[in-house]
Image (cartoon, rainbow, N blue to C red; front, top):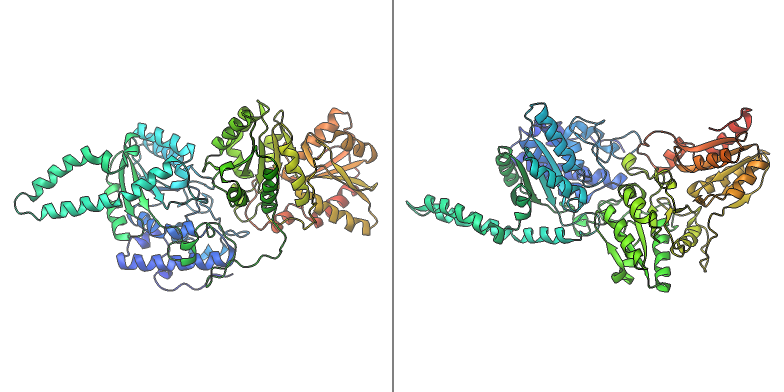
Length: 636
């Protein structure tokens, strides 16, 4: 897709300076044109639609009133920042959104001075903004600092920690709470209920405004009565307007404001700009605003692939093979029918982790804790103490947020908590904040844990059964996207712990692959066989414990070994194999480790990235031939 020639107001807008010259009519027209550009681009390539459509007016108002980039604007997560990207000198690049070599789907400092802080995970904006505000004071500068955070992210523990800190520090800081009543899954918890009560208080806000207008109209005494009403307002505030929780934390609470009325937003932000101390502005928006299909089904259009913009229908994928996520969800339902002690937990990702069917069939055994991964894991540990079998399904990239809880609350106590790490490995267009490339490394060093990775969707089913019957901590990591398409066994079986399998036998070299790299290794072996090169391919299955007997046997019968993983090389599966061989004194064996080097992986399709890092069939073939041609020894 190439960028269309832009006409209308958007054609003449390149930066916030241009926006500040527009009147209200021009701003409203610009909002419509920005929405069309977002819909056009996301319908062609996919992306986060609903959130960004919901914040168009809010974005324009913020950039219109505040002097960005001198004033610092920090977005939380970044799902809602597409309009921000368009009006900050990137409209001509917006067609490349989330594509290889294109602009990121999230704010990135490397892209623009208007992107103050790199984001992608929720709950970080207030902490970052607080740090920037403190640095401003240390440097004796005078710019404004604003953080925009959604109501879903506001429920994360980190956001509460930052609110507690910022309210006490009393620095000039503006927090904009974008309240659309929906993050990725419906919001849960007391804060969500609290914000819903604030929503109903709009009638109070309108009543106060109407009352003041009426009082001012009374001859002679009207203004005195208005002043008296202000004194009464504080006395009734905690009763009428439940914004008192933020005020008790030290913030001046403003709102709720209608998030799609540019005139009101601009007027209020102009007033807020002159206020001192920490301020929380509560803005109510509608997810998917301006696109009927996204308004009607904001969850579907939160993160979506290419779709028909006229009908809202998602364009059919290239394969009808079930995804690993769906196989996981269906298998867990089957296991739960047999085991009443089995429960499922997720962190605001019910559909994303495939647990929607579990939630429908076993609502009393399903727990969505909101955007609170730390709580999810320790909550699971508490359940496990009482002989419940919790399965915690969280994307690999987000499981990183609960690392201490995995160590301290699960592994240290040897509790039977199953960690299901979806989207492990290369994820694709969401880029470096979302690739699940570290889990093998950060989990492998932990005592008491079993780590598995299936070669296909059928093996995933057996691993899940093995995990829930293990009696201790288990992590299963599996990739994003469709399975291999293998037949599914009718009966689930328990896999022997720490046992891999030899799939093909050859004398030239041994390939030891884990998880999603097994089938590319098999395809490479078949191609090499046609060239007269016979290799052994081993499906390791377990990263911890390793199948030591099988790996040592391969090392004794082959002079060269290649390990393959979709994980960083530092501390990963290949490192485990090298450590085993070193401990056994088999260092003369040549070991070539294939995986992700010491760098963050950028955005592109999964296929493009696997090709780039030589983790596809062609890359494995080339690496095998290079390794065989290299007469040197040692490990790499």
